[in-house]
Length: 132
Image (tube, rainbow, N blue to C red; front, side, top):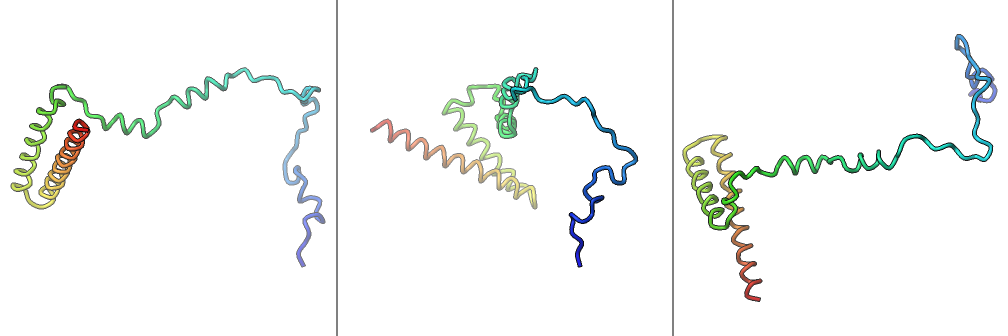
């Protein structure tokens, strides 16, 4: 038969098995009106610091933005020429290498071709909008 918890008075005694227990005699109580005094910290400043700190997404996005030292490469004609040069270079490297390196250069070539396809679609859409 199981023993009920209420039957063992020592089970719920907090000083059972301890070497000594100290009791506070003059513990401060709550104010009589029930209002707790304000804490000296400013929670709004702490929340502002918490919410203004960069998130992991912000850190990753900042790390992935390339540092473009020559802004002329972003002009449409220069960008297209740089994309063609990079595609040509990746094709040469993919044909000259073997094994895993060849696969890596082939994957890079696929990314560059995808970027070229995306650029062609955007150019077509831009021209259609200008006609409309």
